[in-house]
Image (cartoon, rainbow, N blue to C red; front, side, top):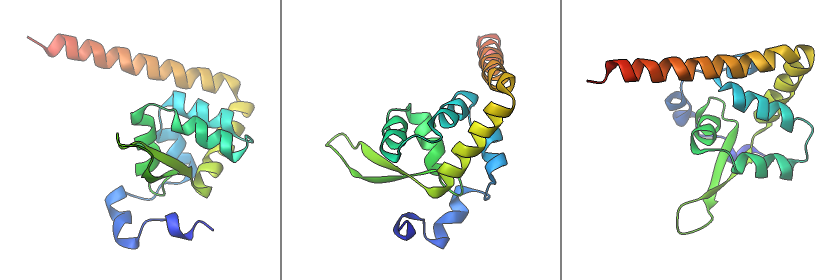
Length: 131
């Protein structure tokens, strides 16, 4: 069923090293992990529609991971928008994110807090390095 959406073997190396579900959760932005956790168990149409509405950077992360979580389809309009199809691996990541959130709800809050701290630190660093 999904055989036609996986990249050719030659393309996989360009995506970087293959990541496990655990590696993906550590790599993705905490807010994106929370979104994926919330999509666990949602109908496929709802999950794909939600992913379609994510910001460009989040969508790009899902597409460029190895293995990918989403595959871009054909252009939908003249502006180059493409529909995303979630891969079976995406559903594994959603299940793992949901399990992590259920096992330790505080960890989800910590994901977001770490992301806010990192963003603030990066912004401070940029403001201090500019002349």
